[in-house]
Length: 224
Image 1: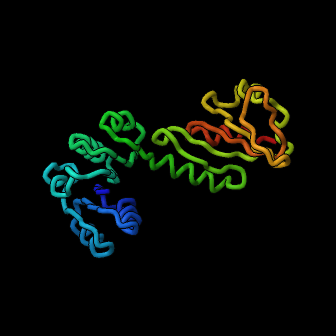
Image 2: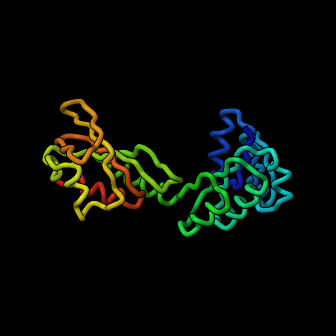
């Protein structure tokens, strides 16, 4: 695998560190020579001093043979331009760091295959740490547009004894939130959530929703 990373900031540097540990072929591009020299010195990976939105710089980095490119620059406009150029060279995998949600559709049009919303991810990580006894992250899907998490229901929870259908019709539960399954701790049993399935006390619910609705959804479900 041949990887090009555009941007040698904290995220780009950490990626170089992790990827170099597993012996990947990596080239890092940054427009600050000092950063390039430091990364080369610390991790012995090839660095290119230049603008990652410049075609000649990309060719020097080996864009024509790249199997994966990662845009980690702080400016969405730069990441977007880099994505467009990578697509023009038929790079199969294009991962981008998105700083502002307003760029989402533009990134999709540009051919990004994975879009990472840095701010949303950070906010959710903080939320999960604050509520770690009640909420646990399972996965993110669809370029970060869908979140699956587990929420622990107390024995005296208000939704205990209610059916999935009853909960789904509540105006307090976001329409985009769906209960996928239930783990009953007392019975040590997992159940697929169906309309007539009742919520047992002391159970874990597997829930799907949008990232910005995790807090609202969890707050409704864990009421006691």
